[in-house]
Length: 374
Image (tube, rainbow, N blue to C red; front, side, top):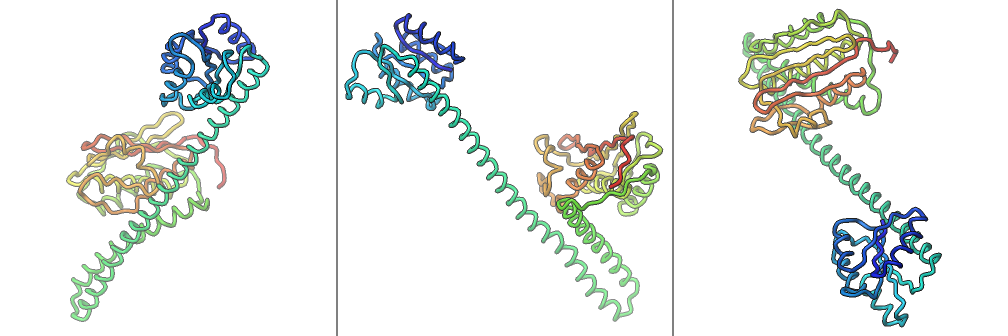
């Protein structure tokens, strides 16, 4: 928008008509004081400012405007018929003006200058947008680099822990075998097996994320019984965590069309997380709701919960909630992999949680998807 400032009504009307005829949006002010009030309220691309006005002259108005942060990008063209001496023109530029036109105004020259300033304004605006986008991208690179470094550190630690444990149990086994202490041998073997299983899960997650990033994670979709899948999963989970009671609310559909192994992977991830982040509790719920076209499956725990501002981030790669004094093992990629699996099935993932009251991680799947080959 253009602001024309002139104490002569005829000048305001004639300039306004010419500019509006060429599709410029125009505002007017009949004094310097009125112009300053308008500059505080509105944003202008250009101000056409008469030099000789009663009260505040054009130079005083320009100097005042130059002190407004809101108007620092606004161009000023001075208009004057009084004096064209070099000293007079120099004062105009030193007051903050970018150009100078003498009266009577040549409208063709004025229009040319206005169009030029508008073009410069648009170019500057685009440059600012590009600069902002570049700064945002650089900040995103830095965050990604920091997350990668954190992940490498976490992965090294998490992989080293079970390896160290296995090494220790193997040493204990060797001593127990020499002594012929079979009960102790069996005990150490069982503990070593647990640590090896943890190591296997960590490596499997690393392989999955590598396949996801390279586009090589394949899906073998077919029709299968969700009820049967849940029975098998619950048996394994209960065997490893006999202290937890897991109940199913709702009736699973007879069959769903998906990659059975990958859907099992997601459910197991949700259940193991529910147990991990629910110290001191003993109940987990699986909530199932089936509509005509969609399956909803949620895993509800009664553990530490997640703060609202953190919930949007839990499915991001390498993200780990570390809001308590308790240290939880893991690489921070299980939920990211789960989200990718569900999204590749045409479904969605999400979480509903209240801090201190537990969480429900859920996914939806279409029940009548197109049977494509992957």
